[in-house]
Picture 1: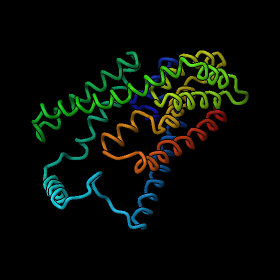
Picture 2 (picture 1 turned 60 degrees about the vertical axis):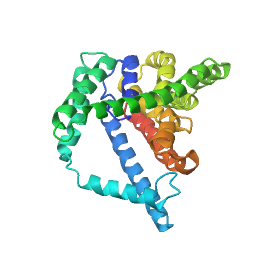
Picture 3 (picture 1 turned 120 degrees about the vertical axis):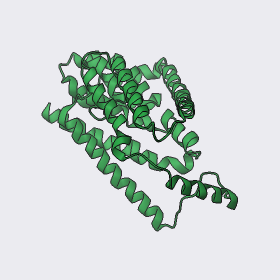
Length: 290
């Protein structure tokens, strides 16, 4: 989400305020992305290993499990094993197209225009390459639209909450305190975006609220635009993933049909703790080398 070249909105919003490209942040940005991937992977593996050692096993959410329901699910899984699936290179090519096109056309279009162009071409490539594997386009577009509406509604609700919080006196006090923090400038920017994203419960919403206020102040200090872009993007992806985050609510309640009590702890470790560690490392590296 926050790595150089990513088509995610959290990587595109800072472009407008720092006049940068999706790849802003250079080698340090790539190092941080790899760090998050490796640390998160090892942490996830350790959690799974511990669960297995403790005798835990997987069962469908809320299936208090009737034998018939489990038998039906098992039969469905067996049927899917026999389905003819595309080669992995064909499967990931539409995603590759999105990333490549985004990073080319962003030099000529606005961040929004570049993202729309890249996503449109990615969808077309996906439909063409995967045509032989499914012709149920009505079902595909219907399910895609349904998923988009659910995700959009959940996220808009949380961003709406953030917009209300923005108008409060306490929010103004928080922003003024963070901007006036003594010490390293990059650290101040990181802290400000992190806390505002946490208050609003949204990475994109936090950036959209924080950067119009913060970017002019930090640009005036003569800091490196690429470093500020990458730090802002990384900072948006830490405290944003608190329990009231739109993605968290959608993933737990809608996609997984789970409860926060059962499912939130691993999410907290992987999407709050790991990114926060990475953010601290990024601030140190950018402060030293930029």
